[in-house]
Image (cartoon, rainbow over all chains, first blue to last red; front, side, top):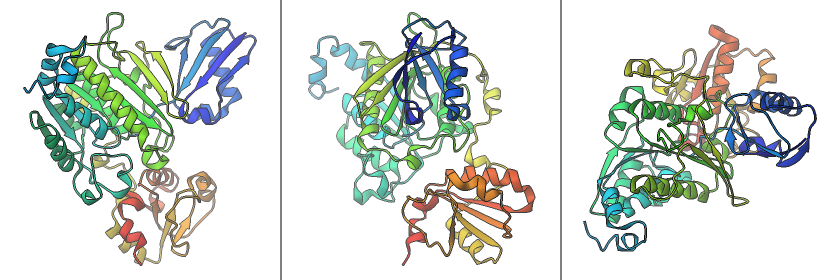
Length: 77
Length: 368
């Protein structure tokens, strides 16, 4: 399954925007687990996922060619 | 109202006299007269928002000037709200500017916010952002949110329903604040002056769109802006769970927003005067927790360098000093370091963090 990954802020320092090929990942919970295994720095950070430009609030099915964004909170002014 | 002043926007198709009247009747509170607040205030005042309140308890410093474009070199040391209010009033004599030279806290935020129709959050820390978010949710006030980090910005409108979704709030995105030190704020992190200029201006535009009911404001959406690529990415926000919003004033007053005024337990935030006194003691160690590349460089004979990235390793070793003073650029990372030390040493050592950091007490650190 192809997924386009988009990241913001501090997270983009260790996860580049990229197209990835993953297998056996059916939903956003599994994908979150996958991300935190691939990029352990995420585990200690606050972030939110968006699937196809919608904030992920509950476990959601991922289909081929999905876009997933990873967004940390900003506070600067 | 002088129609001539606003002529160029009144004659706009889709704006007109009625929209201008709505701006004139609106009361907008801008929180933080900083990098985001300055440009937002300028455009809101110029556009003819009838009542503009500004909240900030800070004074102008030299390192503000590259992004806080209401201020001049001659203004250094003056209160931001005073200088900003004067400039804005000169720019537009037909509107009311209300000064609030205070820091918003649990005990004053509801009173101040309740006097306005729209709230623009241009603050620079998570404590204030969660405090303002919860207060706006409680008071049912539209909140225009702008924030920056590095070369990127975020912009959103909360507490405003649209035809599809009931209103969402910041906690639907990030239910709880990050831990101190998890995310550096822009004072610690550096920011290109023009970035908050862009985001602050966009926040002013969203405010005007909301008031004048034009276009598609970012209600229930968050826009991410990247200055380096000029890319924007908009995400739809829906209602989430995993957080509790205070539903009553009493519940609000019982929330923990880590107001610095209330003082975190255990360690103490000190000023330069107290630092000097502690410095006289034999049993004091002064620790600079900034990374090694940061300037100004302090005298290494006096200040032990322990960057935050090496702090864990440092704490695993024994040291004899009883008084530990932690110092960083703005007094934010030093608080995180103080919390970590307090947790490890408890009452065995006295822990201090220099409030405002080296920037605030520049004269003390750089005296010849």
